[in-house]
Image (cartoon, rainbow, N blue to C red; front, side, top):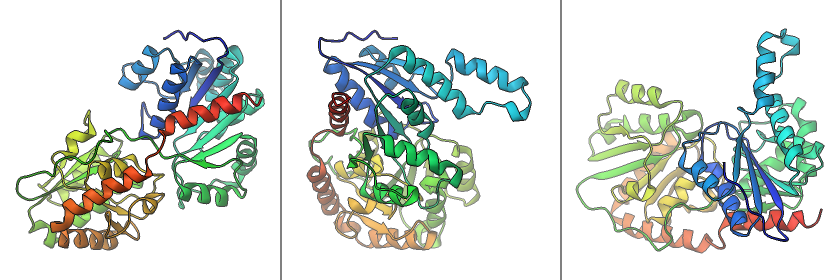
Length: 392
């Protein structure tokens, strides 16, 4: 674990991440903020669930001097988990409660001046924000994905109104997510700010257009069909008109539905569809593919859309989350009104009919992302945390 050297006048900050996986795109914003804070000499303690010590991002954070603790390997968490295994059901300590115990112990020992609580969705980190509130540690609350199909139960509403109300600032990755979260919680968010996720590709213009025969599509997303909708894509490509065309598709990513999607592609007899897994550099995908196909059912503002556009590729997407805020139908991509086989199939058909225009559409998409790109969002989040820490 890295040891943070703190400059005179610097402060200690904590970052709490509720992401249930070893790493996800929703964690790039706080990672960039953590690295910027360290560059400025602040001490940074990362408290995260499901830490993979060998993951390159975790190794990078530690090498830069951030301490990284796994909330599910902490001693208090292990003790409470062991107690849960032998206690009657009425006395069981749930997973989130165990995370709160571990986070509370770490925060009480380190006493940061401020905290960033990062949520993979818009409600899944409320228990960690509540822990900060109990310990009187001011915090900013980051919400990534918001979905019309996922509303909080009434039993959670008192907690959510408390933590969103207590947050010094509420950060969202799209205007859609801000508006929807305010509707779901039933309150205006204090100091709401929209920060898109950071791009993980170079910003020096689109890549050269891929040569060769045929059309090569790429779906870059976690293999989690309930949200990313890869099943919609496979069912579209199973239609006779697509079978007769020189089209291939690669699914790039990992996730809990990998085997199910492989089985579905086999069942639909789609030899032109490949499940490729994760790639180290997203540019490697876009050097050989022409268009992104992403029929998501729920999103914040997906990195894969921004990255494809930055590389000069054509996005064919569903109008969910903040996607319509960056993709203009017919101009910088093709947008389906909803992630259904019929509607996404129509959007993909319109894209196919306009394929001669794809290089020009991709160039416009790259310019659109360049227009949106201002100051890096991670340093902006870091600056908000430092500023608010000074208001304590």
